[in-house]
Every structure is written in structure tokens, then in C-alpha cells.
Image 1: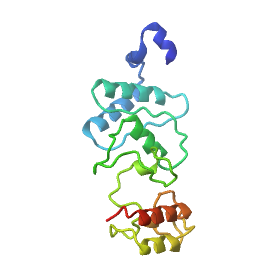
Image 2: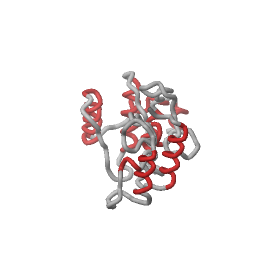
Image 3: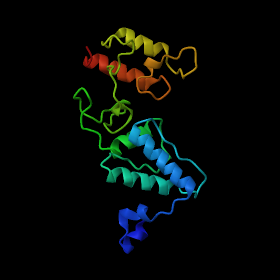
Image 4: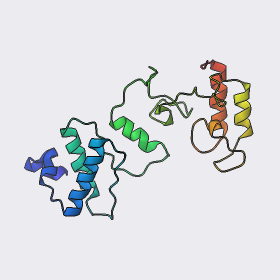
Length: 186
């Protein structure tokens, strides 16, 4: 795309894109889904069939119509929430969540307040495993009972996976203990 800028085309490149009937149908269906807020549109195909060109076309059209749009082209994400974080950053999410708390937060307890899994909206206090709005000894016990459990195991407790990385481990226990000590809930 950078080579086209020397011809003065720039971001209006999509106006010169030839759409086959299949491409035109994909664009119109994706536009319809967005305009009517009917869910998610997916465009897929083999390498070199024009998916990225269609994505750039749609992205620019959405921006031209005053919509918030994020163009995310790298499918290689490290964790299950990486794509969501990238979209949140691209859409310039607000500095505070719906409750007025600052974002991003250190949702995975790794000591870094970056857009990690803590950037999603949660109505639960971090560390409150049993859901009673207080971090107490029973929360610590629930995490301890589920240590090293993964989804599908008999000891799995979804709420004990506080950082949502699909394993209950020392990081989850650390988050609960830190929240209990700080008295941040209730």
C-alpha cells in the first residue's frame, strides 16, 4: 500500500479496487451486518484471494461514515485475550471503565498495568472467588482446592481461575491473597 501514496492515491485506494461479484457480495453483506448491528461478519478464503484488501476497503468505508473501526491484520496472538486487547487499543477505549476505575489494569497479576486480560469489564472483585463481594479465607481455600486444574478436570472451578488463563495456579492464588490483604472488595 505504501507505493500507492507516491501516486497521490493514499487512503482512497479502495475507490480503485476492482470487486468481483463474490467480493462485492462479501462487502455488501459485511456492511449490512455492521449497519444493522446484526452480529459478526466473517470473510475467509485462501491466501491471495483479497481478504486483506476487502478488510482495508471496509475499514476505510466505516471511517468515512464516522464509525469506530479497527483494522487488525496480525492473526498471531500469544494468549486467548490478546485479540480483544488489540481491538480495545485500536478503538481507543476510554481511560476508565463503566464504574469509573482506571484502565488498563493489571488483570493477570503479573505486575504490569498494560492492556492484558484485566482490561475487560468485570462486575466481580478480583479475588472474590465465591462471589460474595468479599475476599476472605474461603476464596483462598477454593483456589487451593483447584490448584493445577484445567478446564474439564474434576477439580476445575472456573471462578478460581482468577486471571482467566485456563489453569488454576500460583498466580491465581497470589491475586486472591493480595486482594485479601489489601481489603479491596466489599
